[in-house]
Length: 268
Image (cartoon, rainbow, N blue to C red; front, side):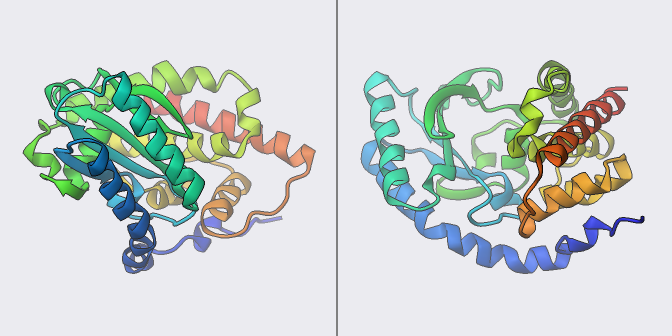
């Protein structure tokens, strides 16, 4: 039996571009409230958006809101607590606020992509870097919510630096995960792994960052099973069907093995 082409269910590039303003408008009230409340807590040199809201293909209620706040100095313990409370209050009072993630980048660390910075994401505080791929996203098309634009503060990210980061991330983080079957039972890994592998492959081959929509459209040509692609498309753009335990296990192996093989090809 021939399976239908799951890419046909994706919005076209023109449809995506036409829907982006309306999708951004849905996120605007939460972003405006966060910006105002953040400024009441601390001085903000700049506040930027990267990811799908900035580059296209944002899906309200499904996509994360990825922010970078540039502060004059790194947050101390008191400010970390106040920022955590701010995020927690938004989550408690605003639908969708759990998807708003922000890293707090001090001005004296703008040039160091390896340094860890205070971040509130996935409902909890943590420390993580602002890597070259995020910096390149900001420079290519980041949205400015407050303060100066990204290219006024961030140093350029050339192709060699971007490629080196992508290779290290694939080799050091994602490839080892593909040796562990358990994570791939979860939707989040099925959605992230194949798409990240596709985006990294395109960036390494073509030296450009693409939206998730474009990466998903390229999955079949990279060898992804059509059933797997259809599952990813339905969760991002439509309504996914319930999975039996057998199909979930099958999907987990499809996602894991495709991601593993795609990484191996990307690193050749």
